[in-house]
Image (cartoon, rainbow, N blue to C red):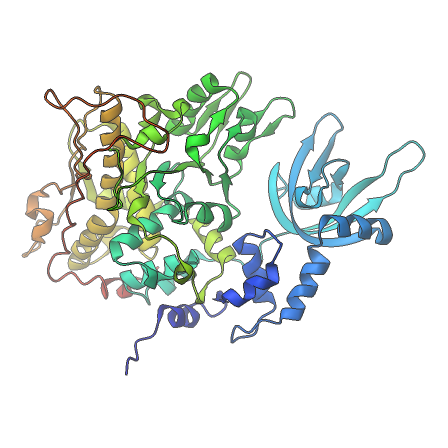
Length: 557
């Protein structure tokens, strides 16, 4: 009889106050309501017992009272005068009228709605321009004489039902092996860890979380339809925003000069642009100039103002695959619209996710069982962005060949640091504080699960740049890990005392040459030219004696 606890059971045991039971039968309760996962999780947990059993009637009553449809809300405002809601709303400073307005698009309230001065003074930090979730009280003010009716927000409570602690997360991490912790992350993303074929697939999948935990991580992900690209960015976190394809504007992304309001880049940890092949800008020439500064330094320089943002940008798109689920064309960036097809611009992206390596989602891919509730999980990821110790780990143990490209170094550091935050959040101390053997064990783990994936993802960007522009080289700099020479038996896989460089090559592609010219003809946005694709070489195993299942149980936050 197998007595090994499941990931579902372990999550429930080690996060007793933060776990929620995912049951597809509960989805019917939210039929017709486009609510993100973090809101649905809050409601389900609010009305469920310790066994995860949900009071269906209580949920329905809550939704009817606190989240009515647009017509019902307007009727209640007219008849009752005061209504309490849990809702998403948009804060808009109105300098012309000297007021702070708000809009509730889902309730069709778009004008003559204002936040009271008392609420503003009490909750100034939470009521900045942009999208906000919260519990509010609205009061209808009927027309008087020539003055039109309007609505006032008289009470507000930010949607922060939990007080997440990174220390608690670190302590809980000690109870899981590395592979178990990867399964925890996948379950928190609302997917079934058992639906993945390998740890490599799982690592590809959780790479979507990199911009959630590290500032200014800019990613590109291409893959087939039905691999869950959109869901993660549009449902998991209120700190991340997904923009559909089609035409958009500088005002929507960066700043609106007419209203004085900032765009999405200024309010979110990450912005994902979906269906990137259909993306266009109303000011395409202006976009490239703005994007270069934003992607390079987080600086947005406009004609009248300069802004700064640590937001990450993610470009997502579909790509045509062969019967073997490999890209038909080696030139991945040909999927991009013309406005993004600039080597100088694409060089500023950190890494690439190979979405074709992920399984197509089916009914068995959706999680059934206990997991971390989305509001807690997404908030902890948001908090991790300002934790600096993980970046210091990179500086302390990683070296790069002299003369390496600065953008390569920045990208590799950000990606490796993000992986460290996701996989080893309990490593909140300098590596030098560990005993000598633990130091070498951690370095081996960091090499395999943080540094190598980081170099590989940036390496794909570099290969694609070479295909676009021969001024670039396809090869990445060599990276190595510092080892302790005083140890009697150094770990051979790290190259001995000298820190021999690791193999950091991205998948081999036919990059052309004198005898094999690159086909520069622009294909259809979704269908590339046929070409051979050489799969990646297998990653090396951990050195003998390094036990990633046991090592981290000894490290405390």
